[in-house]
Image 1 (cartoon, rainbow, N blue to C red):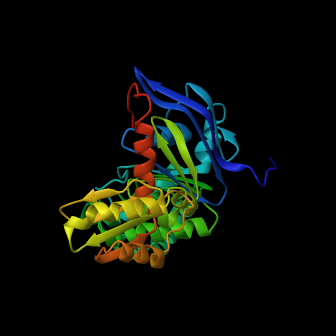
Image 2 (cartoon, one colour):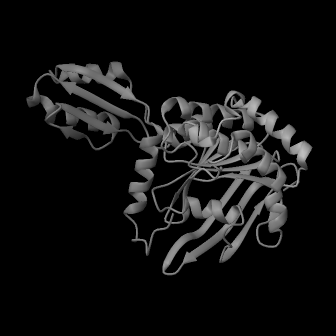
Image 3 (cartoon, rainbow, N blue to C red):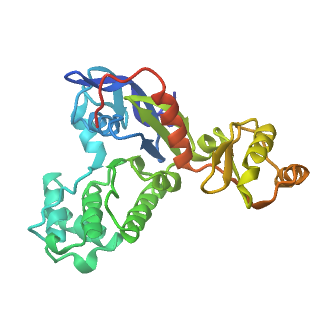
Length: 326
């Protein structure tokens, strides 16, 4: 792999155990420079542990990890100089102003007093916090505080940024502001690793997604590719609940999937096999031929929620995990 093609974030066979709990079980990860990677998984899947290893906050027990070309164990100081990190909880000081927070972060990163002040002013203006810069952070809204925390991770203009559930608990407007910030950073060439519980967030922001469960990657690819791999959802809502059984037969025969009947909603739903097209005209003709009266017929492309549920449900059918970790 050439230097230009080298991934900005790499993990190969990384294992991490906390007592009896295996947090990471041979996790592999490769994030190309200048892209956004969404790291998804159930609670306890190992997402936060992966970020901690990459940020040099926890050493791997086995395997290797590199960030910006530097080994996280042998070259930890180089890694720290190359990254920004915004964790699940804001790390800013609520007893001082937003401007003073950024100035403090700059001084801690050895920018010098003058450059730290300049950088604070640049970031406050760039990310829409200039009007609140001289207010105590304790007076900020939750969204503003979270945005300041994100901005603080950018004081040194890091080429790699780790965002661990950056919008948890935020209202839609504040979440949108964080999304806009992430898009701007990625557009400027920053490599972003994003863990999130909001699948819409990953769908909108990520170039590629890695689904993690029980400490290992179980699926990798762009959002559109992952969605295409699980097929479409076809649903028919009926006027007469007595026709549910006949409708289930029609849907199963056309799609090859197992029809699910909801008697209360008078709806039959089936998930098609990947790559199997479902043409509404053909479906309607088949229903007419069975004298089925449909109130509504719909074909819905899968969402990332569907992908997540399908993948993690399938993985849950395998051997039970020995333990769960963050």
